Structures are given as structure tokens and as C-alpha cells.
Length: 130
Image (cartoon, rainbow, N blue to C red; front, side):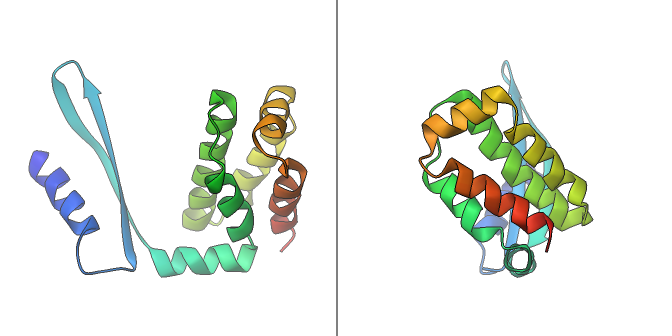
């Protein structure tokens, strides 16, 4: 497992600028385990973002990454939903994010973290109709 993790981390620094990898590592006590490695083509992901017009709302969310834990969880959820959509071409992932944004707790946290909260959510909603 350690060798696989080292190889995956080494590939992140490798010569391929269009290949990305996510490495999820879990630490419990004094044990560290490699949980998963997901490989994807960054150019293909960029094409998906361009086609769905999701780059702008993702950029806005990332630039103002909030301190509020509720807002942070929502931003992470959006990023994960976009990746799941990219991998499985399932609009349900993006619909779930939009529904979550309408919940009172997330809406309140989002409005306090982002001045342009409505614009960001509307751009995500518009991406569903493309």
C-alpha cells in the first residue's frame, strides 16, 4: 500500500500535465491506509466544465472557500458532484447539489460566505439545462 501511495503521489509531480489523480488516505491511530486512487484526464474534465458552463461557479466557490463548516461542506459537495457527473454523466448528482443549496442552513451559510451566492447557484441551475 505504501508503494502504491508513493507511486500515485509521484505521478502527481510527473511530466503529464493533463492527468490528475486523487489519493485518499485514512489515518487511524498510528496506522495510515491508502483508501483509493482515482485517475482522470484533466483535458476531458475541462471539456465537461466548458460544455456545462460550470467553470465560473466552481471558480467563485473555490476563490472564496469559506471558514463556515456548513458552507465548506457545500463547496466540497459541489466539487464532488461535478466529478461524479463527469465520470458517470448523471445529472442527478448536480440536481442533488441544487436541492441542498435550497435548504435553510446551507442557504444562510452560503449567503454569509459569498456576496454573489444567488449568482453562483443560478449558474449551477443553468448548467442543468445545457
